[in-house]
Amino acid sequence: MMKNFVLLLLVTFLFTACGGGGLSEVELRDSSNAAPSPISGALTGTAATGAPAANAIVRVNCKTGGDNGLKKGLTDAFGKWSIAMGDCGGPYVVRVKGAAAGKSVDILSVADDEDVGGIVNVTPITHLISSNVLGNADPDTAFSQVANFTKNDIQTAQGKVRNALENVIKAVTKNADVSNVDLINTAFATDHSGLDGILDAVDIQVTGNNSVNVQVVGEAAIRVDPTDDNDLDAKAASIVADETKVDNLLASYGSVGALLDGLISYI
Image (tube, rainbow, N blue to C red):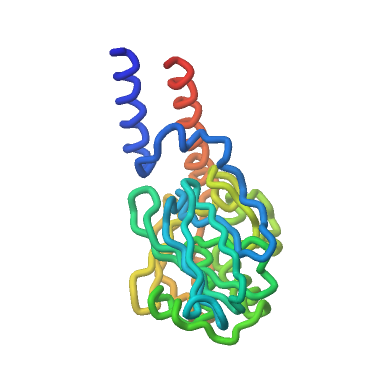
């Protein structure tokens, strides 16, 4: 009994020190932490910042229909969510509000009728894309602005943000050409690989007045106005990524996971 108690204290310490956000080892090791599958007639995705936005509120602002123009739902323990659109017509602004790893989260994504039945992720990166589409980075203001944007508008904005973050995407994916990396519509799990690895490597914080701080691991924060195409282009060269630092960060998640597996097997 004492051995189990001591090991439980050690596990708790490890995940508190590593920013585990209070998730239990059962939640972290659950085999259901897989990328979500699309559901017909619904918007489905993962809400995460590098940690899952667990049990967070999801709201979809519809251009037409819905309950006063809104659809609502919740994420699960791994940040996955799905909301049937029914009579809700696009375009759509998706908002996730809650917490991830003990930090408050209030981030947006954008979608079109073409995305119904597919994947729409909500992350700090999709917030940058949404800010460019909607012309505002403030979650309250931007969420209310369901304008007549199109899928092409979303893809154009994604290209601008992808270009700004090109160095960190390359450092994580090890691909020289990242032009086909879809930051919104690619299904992913919160397992520190793929898109989740990119989110681990870069911290994005809205600071107000259409100002966003973008900080890659081991680098200085760069202030960006995501609503300004010229500023996104100008800051691309400044948002650098040291591949060794990125690799070490992502490897550290694997090391902690391996240690936890060993502890649980021992218990």
